[in-house]
Length: 412
Image 1 (spheres, rainbow, N blue to C red):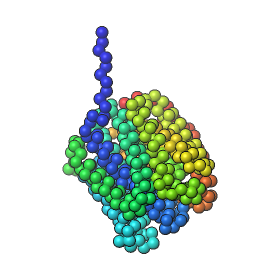
Image 2: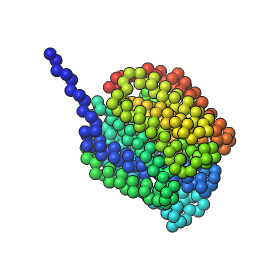
Image 3: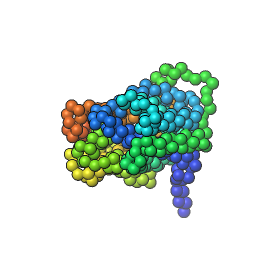
Image 4: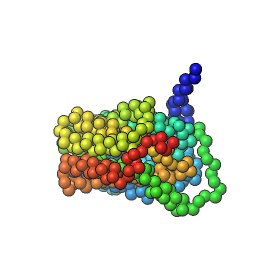
């Protein structure tokens, strides 16, 4: 009689993985509190939806300029040290914004606020590649799918708690208090990453030329239909389908609620993603992963259309929560695909390229949303974006057949 196969060890029993999750959660809480607060802060000053879109543009330009160099640095330097410096940079920006909100630092209209946001863009270029590269050092390959599910839950928990906390802090104590609490989380994230126990690859005494090394990462991504298709799908869906940047305008002009409701709306997508992430952490997808990814992004587009047409606050919350559930499936599948398909020595560069696709699309999407709202009106612009997301799914399914037919076993 054969013995039963042993149950797989949970990634949550890995102390290095737990420490890495704390780093990700604390940095996410800091960033999300700032995102909610600075949006409310600027809309109080300008009452202009385009000003909200400019937040994204101001952050994405320096992010885009530094992302590839950040990926090179992660592949060739000590990753924990880079993560610590990034968290300290996040601390600096939040303290600057706190100084502006309290009147201790001159704002020069809104110039100082946008300058702090620009520095945030540089900082963010390092945060995700550090996490991605260390993820593969703390977990064995067979645990990547479950680890990606758990990591998604932690990230989305930050996306739930951070915005809700930001909205409540602004409503209760004002913008300055919210910024100071965010600064505390950034400092805690720096401590978490520098104290992480994980083996890192030895630094090479002879580093590859920086532009040649970056070119190798770009060629890997653009010559891999599965990786490129997954990244492009998410990039364009977020670019056209993102409505988060316009939430202060929806709250103020359509739903007629205050900053605490803004926190709830920003948290709703992440709440849905947490529920999905918990399920996928226990039941990681293996069959028909590519098809499931396409369905999830199409569902995201439909939910965004439903949100734009809603005039009831709780229906709007529901639509955003459902959009988060669809996005949660997409995040787990895309993260698993990237971890399984990427060689270890290229994780920093591939993660930075993914960040350009995904991270920049959030900020460019924010600018696109603000500009479209100015040209088309608030509600029509979001409806248009939802339909464009559906078009992106159709084009990706047509142009990337390997992704459409993908099973995760193909990458093991």
